[in-house]
Image (tube, rainbow, N blue to C red; front, side, top):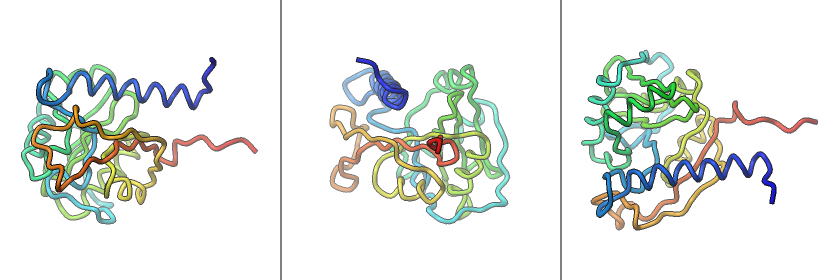
Length: 203
């Protein structure tokens, strides 16, 4: 059976996520990332869901500098919403054409992969609105896609121009270590694409 372009792309995204999950699964298996999408935006360190700060300065930084800020954000109250990424993982992103970005405080940052996927967005106590501003800047820097847990995040990203393209259901076997089911439930993983990168049908 021949798949159309959209179906093929969706299948490839599912395969890519499955590879990430199998490589970085939860307790009882190699790694410790668990069933985690790549973005938290407003949850990494008590972040924001505001309208953003258009004047935020963002700079591209080396792997080591980003790793230190990212790992610090993972120690926050919602740090388990951020995927675990070793220095080797980050170096692989860099080798694949990706880049790492931090604001002037070093408390807000994000990753853009060589495939233009936005990952690891965090606001770890930065100025109010910085998480939203970071996402806007990431789009300006070329980010087109992202994935996140269902709940508040798709709505926040939606206000920033992202639209849902697909989702996969939660699977307990990939739950992050220490996941609070009573508080956080079993959210789907939602895949989104920025409206500016969606091809409109020809009239």
